[in-house]
Length: 359
Figure 1 (cartoon, rainbow, N blue to C red):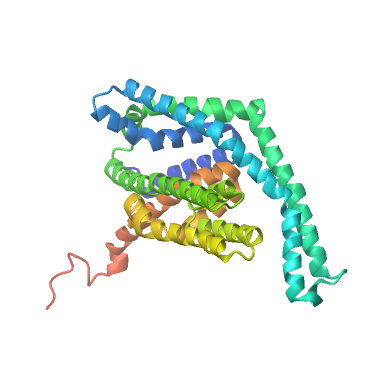
Figure 2 (figure 1 turned 120 degrees about the horizontal axis):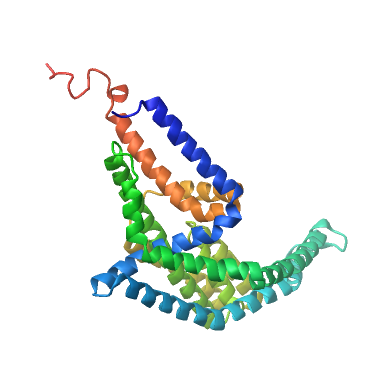
């Protein structure tokens, strides 16, 4: 006999509170485990595909691990130094960019930029602040990444956790299934399948879209000759995960830099703008429909809200779990709405399925 609804609500409420408190107090501690779980979830379909090709689970995990290590080493050697150098150089020339912007407006609006005008002082101060704090931020990030604690956490613990979870993923899912309340197991399995389908469509699809677009932007901007093209492409590709934000920020940054670098040579400025326009056309008409699908169920506004809310509450760990939690809430909300629309509370006694035939 199932427990009364009130007792079930109490137990599930306690479980949710414990989960939120654990996230709140153990954010930095569980970070490598969340990262490892995310990596394992992302790579599990690859391992399953290799198993279908005849490899054992252990062999599939070894192949995936060696491939990831090789790609990571190549990126670390070939891309990261250039990316860091370009980012620091971009912050260093920020004051010069501000002065060029001031000169541009001075020619057209001389009254706004007198020697002691607020606009001039603001631009000068803004450039110096970006240079000082931006360079300091990059140096801090580089130093932190090189510190022993962060290296152990991000470069050792998380990959080890990912390997173990990837190897035991199917067994782990089976064990979790055995722990489900028997009365609710079919509904929980159905919701879990819907959540998994949503996450698979969105995270794996959008991750691939971000990688493709980031590479396209970086390579195209460097071929055009735009300075800091690698940084702009990396930023635009990473922010593509948030709908429209990557294109807006990356496009504004790239076009702004192109105006300073190619001022008067409008062909190159138009080419830079065309790169982002074509990127959006490719994303909207080819990449997103093919790789993500049209029925993911995560509205852009809901996604942005979830990222903002969880990032504010739980920091970086919150950003990592925002999309899965948002997807789960979306699936549960749609299930709840469907149950409500099938209930007498919504349909009323006259429209109930067993309410009799119409006259």
